[in-house]
Length: 467
Image (cartoon, rainbow, N blue to C red):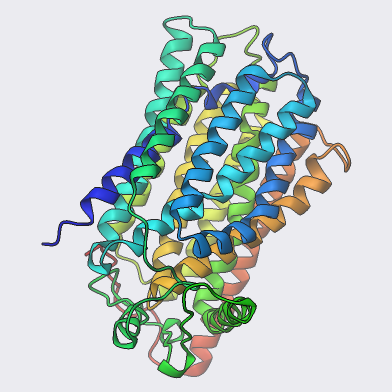
């Protein structure tokens, strides 16, 4: 077995662990509203937090192109530096404007995550793709869970002031900053820099075999092919015409990918639900703070974040062993689980008991992680690596666009600036609408299959498993 993949994977795992190791994160709103920053709920929720959404959306597409043009490594260094600036500002700066600037740099750090998850594909063989992706994602989740747990123990058991949690978070970011400098520089990227021969390029652009990812669904609509005459190779040091070719390639790939109704359905759910998911996790701490003020009571946000992260990782792992014919039951499953998510958010909003809130939040995150993993598998079938990154990037961009619209209308003080309880009622209704959309889609698909008079009704279950 080839060994070169181990070194960059190890460095990426070290980087991912320390970047996501943030003991302060479960207590961020409590810290901002505490004596260290002395900000009000309105300032934090309606004036500061929306800046992250706007900057993330604004930077996502330029960062996507810059990541490919610069070949990943420089963008990883920018991400690491952005985390350092973010937590240095959090530690030293005061006032609404400074915290808004902090959110901009955090938006930059979030947007550059595309470099973290794309770099490894350019330096390892496709046969190691699943393994290294699993390592990187697992270590990132582990870093997040351990950071949350350490933060809770320091606050609850050792009675450590939250200021020192921000110091630990900044130190973790500084440690993470070292790792990307030692990563090997890729010789190629997906669009701008191609140095493979035409035969190698052909192999790279073939759809992923079922032994590499998952078994193919029985729905023929999900099968995608890319003929040789549709491929374009760009040389190093592209001119403006080369940039134009990149946009043409992006547009052609998008049209072909989304021409599949199956992939379109999963992508629509991805975009709609990720929008709602980001809104809920962004403002969940504000809801908890409203129900149980940290100034008056002991809070357990760190334990909740730790458990919910581990439950999400477990749910994602369980998908590998589920035996479901997703081509038949996909839309119905999306409907049912969207109802579960809507109920969780509704309970968080209306019961207003902190333990109900915590439990509902954990179930909410686990359910979303379960579904987003299924969506990842379903979209990735028969997609080459370039399309894999492109489709996921576009789905995320649409999610951010929807999130920005809702943030402007519902959250931002320039819009309605609604109370946190009204916000969560809207988020619960939003997921209920998603459930209705996919129930209608499932009924339409069911009647369409029966109307075709074929033998497609309820075929034998399909085994989805990792190779």
